[in-house]
Image 1 (cartoon, rainbow, N blue to C red):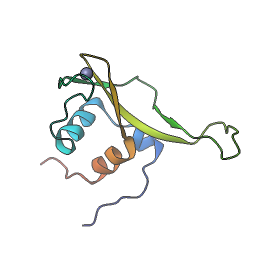
Image 2: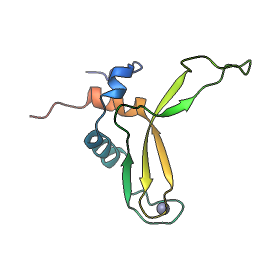
Image 3: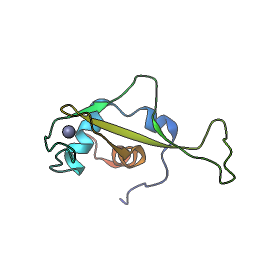
Image 4: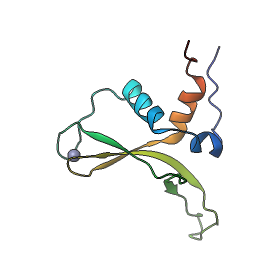
Length: 102
Ligand SMILES: [Zn+2]
């Protein structure tokens, strides 16, 4: 069956769990030491009830409320605090299409 790659809903993004982030990154991002300090100790950065992301500006330099948002999942280097982010849409699409556990 072909993958369903349509843009995820905010409900799909909001339903992503810490365990799913770890599973996704373990599967999709192989060895990735911190580019700042070289260690490989990452922690998932999550806040209950919030979805973080990049906020878009209108091209005429004005804001919209709510603003357009590119949702992100972020992990923090526990040694130096460097933050790296991945588009949450990629994780939501991966989650939607991953085989169910037997
Ligand atoms: Zn680091």
